[in-house]
Length: 530
Image (tube, rainbow, N blue to C red; front, side):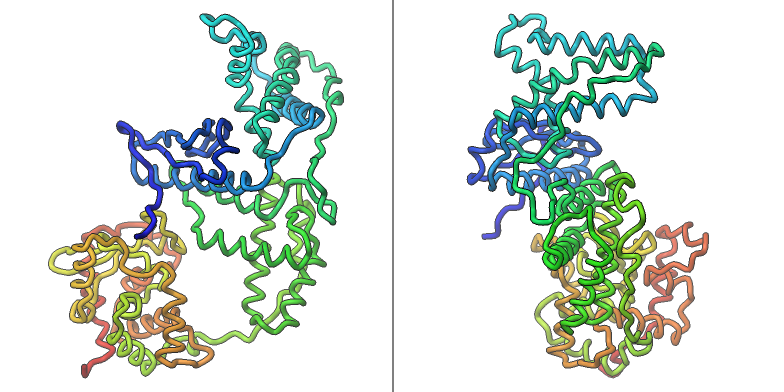
């Protein structure tokens, strides 16, 4: 039996995340207060046997996006809890509280707000420190702890998140207490500024600097800027917002593998102190091993450059102020294969299609045929579901879109493609309807590109080095379109390309579909005698 994947649950009309805390970390997690991303903000929850938080949406698609981001954050927490929790010393708690206090004052230096606002803040802070936020409660140790948590708990979460720390319950309570003390003069300082008094604040220097109690790595690390953290923050940032485009899991995995390999070479996971010499050394190591092509090495360097750009953005320009270290490293050259060499030859195309007819696996049976009659990329066809297919004025079509968290190259890749009559004759629509009738959602394997490419090389036997087993259909389809007299606008739309013309942004309603289908039928059968 397949494991049931967690999904948002609906309570009333609103969706929630509600998952079991893994049994191996349940004791450590019990009672912890943590912040999880929900939309474009963070929500605090208290962990029990379950983790539960409102996703604050009634829309299923949005709930799934928010659920994915929140679950990923919790999965990261479980990983941390499987190791030893950080215990803060008194000095560390004071240092962290001082950081929060000083940051709070610095951020409001230009626009401190109104004096009356800070009088209200001072009163609320004092009430929390005295355990009397609830006017009906009798102040005691219990009400004091509750009120300090209500007033300063969110700030404690932000402080810990900024440092990448997960602490035990005692350390967190210690930090909340120190924050309540450190923040005492924030209202008075900002009130003075609001009234025009910018007298130098001398208390900022009273707090010690935070020093981690964990052993420093050999290269003197410990600043918190790790590749793992940078990637996690980028994933979180891309998932935030109402119309966010989350990073695909495959993309995240690609960058994590890259970071692991580069970190292994330079013996450090720090992301804030990479040098051009280290990048060049890694490049030379890959070249000398002879295991990778120059194009692959070039791509890895480009991905590393992108990763370091994330560091620059996340640090708001404070890191790599002189530029990206990868930019000055000479990129290895490689003899480029011409488009003609990469394109499938007609004999190769026919061999693939004939072999596909004999396959029982849906990915191998149908993906090559669909690419042959659309010029689509394999990773555009692979995520298709039965519901993507529909009938309009007697013809069949399918939608290539970003629905359900799918990833496409650009906005022009979103399109509706007619089903060529040859595909109908082969039985594609019957296959789709059968999958739908059986309750299936996916038609093909998620990682179809590697599957098909390996099959073409090893099973079909097309070993020509320059050939692109997957992308070759894209080139051949365009040649077939030109040969058959298909209009340029139809060819451009069906293949999901852009010519940079403003007209490409208009229209594209269902009204055009019959004309598009007529244009596609101009492509003749690849196997005319069969």
